[in-house]
Length: 217
Length: 217
Image (tube, rainbow over all chains, first blue to last red; front, side, top):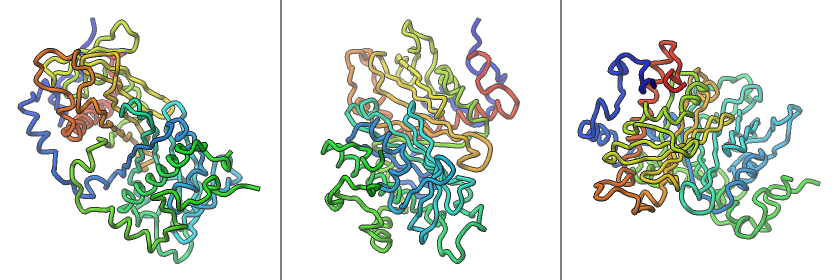
C-alpha cells in the first residue's frame, strides 16, 4: 500500500502557514492571494534580499552559454570589470573593478553545461573567500517563449558582506567606496549590463560572427 | 599577441545601447542608473514577462534539491496539484490541477544534480507539448548568505500559450477557466507555494525527519 502525501506529519495543522486546497479552498485562498498582490511594489520589497534581472537575447542559447562560461566575457559586457589575467591558481582570475578606483576583483567561474548555469564567484580585494556570487542561467527561449533565442536569468543574493566588508584589512587604504554601497543600484546596474550582453550577442548573431569571439579562443 | 576585448567589432559605437566605462564614465552613467531606479515599480513591470519568486529555507540544500527532484513532491507543497501517477511514458506524470475543476496536468521533471536545477515541464490537458516551465534552482545559502540552509530561486516565463491556449481542442468542454487567467496572480500564488515548501522542509529538518519523506522512496 502506498502512503499518502505528508503521511510523516501526524497533524499538518501543526505546520504554521501551510496553505493547500484541502485546508483552504478557493474561496478562502483568493483573498489571501489578492492581499499579497499590489499595483506597485516598493524597491526594497523587490530588490532587498535578492536582486534578479532577466531578459531575452536573439541568439543561440548554447552559444550564449559558452560565451558567458568564459570568465573573460566579463571584460566585454560588464560596465567596469577590466584587465582579466589568470592567477597562479588555475581558474582564479584577477581583474580590476574600475568602479572602485582600480579595485582588484577576483573571479572563479563555475559553469554547468547540463543546466546552462554560469556562476561567477567573485570578491573585491582578496581571492580566498569569493562571497559575491552572480548566479546566471541561460534558458532556451524555444521552450519557455515558443521562439528561437536565449533567456538569461541573473540573481544576486544580499550577502552580509555587502553591508559590512568581511575583510577590511585587504582593502586599499582610504578607498572611498565599498561594493555594497552599490547594492541598491544593482537592479539597474545589472539590467544595464544585461542589456550590454544582449547588444553584443545580437550584434554578433545578426552578422554571423561567433558569439564567443576569436580573442577568447 | 593577444587581441583586445570586442576586437571583432570595428566600431563599438555601432552597437546601440552599449554602455561601458570607456564610452560612458561614472559621471555620465550615474544619471542613467538613477533614471532606471524607482521608489515603487508597477506590478506588470516586475511580473509581466517573467515571474520570479525566491526564498530562504532552513534545511540542507542537497536534501531540498533531492526532494524537489521527485515530481511527487508537488503533491505536497503545491496548492492544488494532486493525484500524481506515472503515465506509460517513463518520467511523464499525470495529475490533476484542482484549480481547473479537475483539469489534467502533465509533468516531466528535468533535474541537474550538478547545478541543483529542477525544471518542471508541464501542461494542462495534454502531455505532448509541455510548455508551462517552472524553472527552479536550489543554492547553498552558506555560499550566498554566509549561513547554513537553502535558497530556492523560481522563475516562470510568460509563454504565449498563457494568453491563448495552443491546444484548445484538448480542453474539457465548458471549462470556465484557463491556466493563463491566473498569470497575474502567479507572483502571489507561487510565493504562497514557496512558503509551503519552506514550511514543510523546515518542519521536517527541525525534527530530524527526512526532507524527502518515506512515501516517496
